[in-house]
Image (cartoon, rainbow, N blue to C red; front, side, top):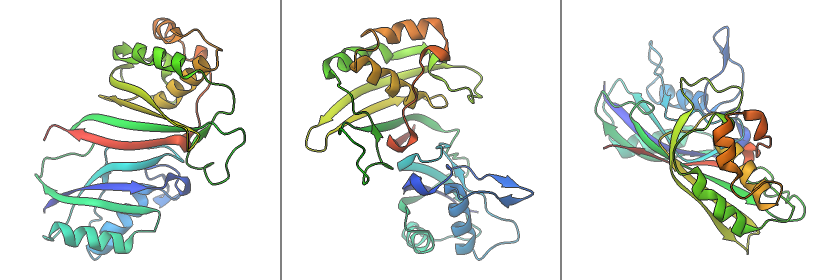
Amino acid sequence: MPRYRAIVSYDGSGFFGFQVQTKNGIERQRTVQGELTKAVNQMAKNPTEPIKVVGASRTDTGVHAFGQVVHFDLPFDINESGVRKGLNTLLPRDMLIKQVEKVSPDFHARFNTHAKRYIYRVSTQDFTDPFKRQYTGHFQWHLDIERIKSALPDLLGEHDFASFAASGNQTATTIRTITRADVTIKPDDQELVFTFEGNAFLYNQIRIMVGVLLEIGNGRRDVHDILRLIAVKDREQARFTAPASGLYLDQIYYND
């Protein structure tokens, strides 16, 4: 059975996250994986043994993606353009298959991941924009961008990010390596855009990091409070978690 890798983008505001949630074998909520699984099986003419769709990242409710990666096996050989066209015909309008390619049978979307890039959009308007509320976080208070820029390098490198992991984190270790952390100002849009790259991220880690950086920019924390938070390994001291609406899975890197 040929294996395919697909790059998927989606508007996360209409999904209860990526991963299928079932009860007694029935999907409880609408999920990205659920919609992909239905489309892949429909394209394969609903085989006796259902086809599984495996994702690289289990994005949460309300989180968006420009570059989620999945893999699946089809019972017959179809060219890449045919798979992309077929799936986009079957999928709902808040999802898009951007690219499809055949890969080796041992490729795994999740376990072969080398690094990930996320972006986080923050609206700095004085009131919540109704057309942005599902696609940005919102912070209406004063921000000193130079303070944020001074703090960002403190995240780089290998650290124990226990203070930045939400209580639902189930990983064996909270040590992660961040290779990129920067911010771009978009004055015309009244937005800040954070970009983070790393080998992996903990549950809600980016949203917690953004929350801390916004508090640094607002003067509620010392410029280098991130170093203290890394040292104390105490989630309670990080406090604010930025909302899911501003988070986007941008790209996933593989060694190939």
